[in-house]
Length: 506
Image (cartoon, rainbow, N blue to C red):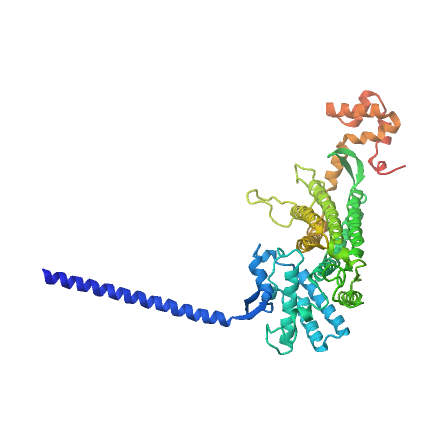
């Protein structure tokens, strides 16, 4: 019995030892894997430093320590909140211009040319996805994004010259790429470049396309007489062409308003450096840089006449945003009118038919909705909201520096892009395909009581009002009510109540 117990105990101890050995083996495998992974990770990073100390930088990235530190300190919002590509391209344009001008002032031509070539890759956008990770929500001067650009261009220039990545030699991010510059004048310069380029490249062509399509419809509908509406109630007649002519004029004014903001947008802060005095620049640097940027972009950029204003305030961008806000207001009105005029198809106004682009309901078969109108009115609402943010940001320029710069430019650029894209879609997928339902328009026109207005000059306002109220109360036509009241003859009614004669002054 005792021997059996000892045997059982020894067996249990042996099993326990085996389990411990197995656990130890697993632990060693995990530890070995971790050690191996650690060594691989060390190989995946290089060590760079800023004035706060050393940091690990991914070995395949062109940015440096200050960019890494910003990703640590401002992990806000994720990839959707990244600094817009247009701003990064604007920074690249500025850095290229500054390098070429600095070469005139004595910067080593080899260094200047390498910076210029690296900047071209930034301007092209090919480095954006992998090497510009920073978000909008950072320092309000855009310093981290300026340094992100300096580091990327510096390291790419070093590569082009056969140097070691991260060595800051022979091209230093501050001493060479940022020469004669400060974040306080480079970032606002990039803001203006970015917005001006996007307005000219995307927004104005899109609005001009929409204006052209609306003008064509105005001409197409010029002979279709319909009932007007004020306060959403029946009013006197006009033509559908006149109605669309109003929309056309709104869009023409929208384009003009945006163009009116451009002269101030073309004024650049570069050369103001830290507070607007131009410390650490050369005489003529600002003007030469503006001229070079103008040459690179094909837009008439000039040096801002007062650098203190250019750094401390962003009234020019608030003005642009205000014009965009007005465009959004116009588009909201136009798109709402069009979708209401197209309401139906049987139980609404039904004066217009819109292109049928996609199914409108997951439950109601055959339903088609005015989706382009809905999309562009949502865009209009967003632009109005963006303008509120820009207004708050613009009003917070304290002393010598506004520190809402990234938020301001991001919102203005978003408004520009949304208005441009939605205008193109609205033109192609809605306006060009609008059809007037002439039978429905004519039926509603002749049922309207407000045609009675044509009788005012003949029988007076009071009698005309009595005719309209009688017809409405009794459910009769205007002519029937007029004859019943004895105010005029059938021939007089036929001669005086003509919608085609009610379309303008006599």
